[in-house]
Every structure is written in structure tokens, then in C-alpha cells.
Image (cartoon, rainbow, N blue to C red):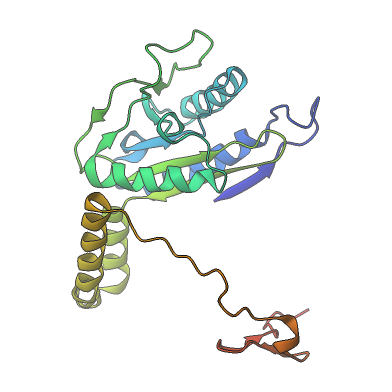
Length: 243
């Protein structure tokens, strides 16, 4: 993940140039990683995509310009805020979760809240659609996650598909260790499937812990090397960094 501030600009909330830098660096990372896996033509972008008049112009120019610089033709773009709105928490987390779904299913969600795209949206090198598009589950090996900060920091991340990561780990650690990992991972996958099915068929129980005993500062055992918290492992303050 790469982070850059906007720098000098007209006002606090005005867009700046920081997001060009983060997208460029993340694309370079993806290009290197996907060199043997079909290249950037097998990637897609999860845009910040608030859809405001200012965002649609500025973010589309960023993504379109960088896609052109990296010779990407018709880069598939999704913007899941059309389904979810803007999270109060980390909105990029919504985009990562959706991107993992694209890797699994091969379906890029359409921007369903529009019947067409405004004329001021830059899309020479971008592929936008208000329809869901099925590319096949084996098509995508990478994604760019973009979080555009109006008035703050911008962040862009290169996300690699599970299939790419699997090939990478197998190559690095060998067939036997990869096979051992897969055997251990079976129980994890089973738990994931159970959670998935439960989420689709029932409402998860809320975690409500009001009134349970809390830990107060007076209960901590504090020294220059560690802080001991009742019921938890101590937090060691020393680091290995050499000044």
C-alpha cells in the first residue's frame, strides 16, 4: 500500500495530486507482480467512487491517465459505494472485501445507480458499466484498491489474487510445504463456509457487553520495560531498533 498527502492546494477539501502518486506506485507494483500472469490486462480497479461531481472528474482522470501510462486498454472499474454508501469506518475495507469476491467469482459489479455515465468522466482507458460483468473466475490475478482523500491522505494498494499468491508460495517454499499448508487450511475453509452459510440464513447474534468488568489504569503494572494487563499477556516496550 502506498500513501501520499495532497500537498499545497486551494482549500482543505479540494482534491490534490497525491492520488496520482499512490496509483502510479501501486500500478508499478502490480505490473512487476503480474509480469508472468498475463500482465495488467488481467487486473481491475476498485475506485473510491463516491460519485460526486468533483470526485467523478478527478478520480477518473487519475485512473484513466495512469492506465494510459501503463498501456492498459479498457481497465475494468468497479465502485461498490453505489451499493454500500460511504462507510463511517475504513471504506477501503469494503473495496477489499468486494475485490476478494471478484477474484472468487470473476464478476465485476456494475455501477447500478446510473443509467449512463456523465460526459466529464474520463474513460479512454477505463471500462465502466452499469451491468454486472462475468469475466470468469480464472481471469483476474490482481486489483488496485484506491482510497482518495479529499483534504487528507490518499492510499492505493496492490491486491493479488489467491491463485497468484498460491503459485508464489508454492514456488518459494516447495511442493511439500505447500501441500502441508493446504491440509492444515482445510479446517479454516470449513469454518469459512459455515460462517458464510449462517450469514445467509440467519441474523448473527450481536455482541453486547455492557456492564462487564472493565480494566482501569490503576490495575496496570507499569515499568519502563513492560505494561502488565490483568488477564492478558504483558506488552513489552523494548524494541530491537538500534539508534
